Image (cartoon, rainbow, N blue to C red):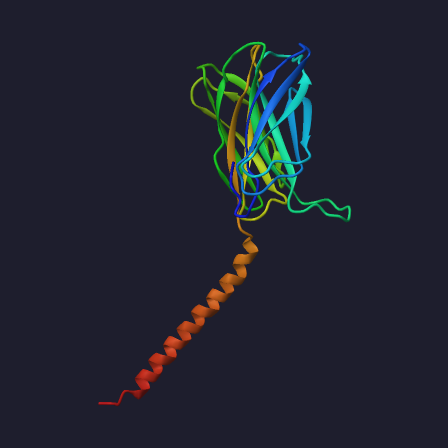
Length: 261
């Protein structure tokens, strides 16, 4: 996931799924903080087939450390196969306020692919190009068939805090050959200027008896505030004008000092 220009937590997430009792799916997550700041407390949310699971690490995760949590979901699913499990990790930035106000929050998106019942492979390939965003912009998500067959696919773009999805990709027909594009409109909210935000794109195949989800990650770079450029342009224009005036005056003085032949 993208780094921040300031000290921040940054997680690498791995995991596995099992069902000890035959009725509940337990997803074990190992959360390694590869950043240079702690994330405490840390909340982890996951979504699997419209069911939500949540865990909390009150002590958080220190830089360079790995902690383990378990998310639990009902085992019954409408379609067996390969399912995407999007994750949202959230933690406060800086010390917690003592006056009861909400602390500024940081977040990171992650995901796992979970096999339920039948082992299969993703039906499509997802391409999430990097996007530079000032206020709003369109992310052209690319989709290609991975098995040489056409597919009907639902596309979702999942963002961290501070980015919003205005116009989702919806359903797309992916041809047997070639590429389909799902345009997704993103809007900057509270995401800091000149930061890099990681997103997760999930493509769920709607045709056939099996779920064969595909996932890709992308980066949205938040542009610097365009309002800061206007004063700089004004200063540059004034400096340029002053230099031109100085050069013109120097040239005039030089000519005035030259004796006539």
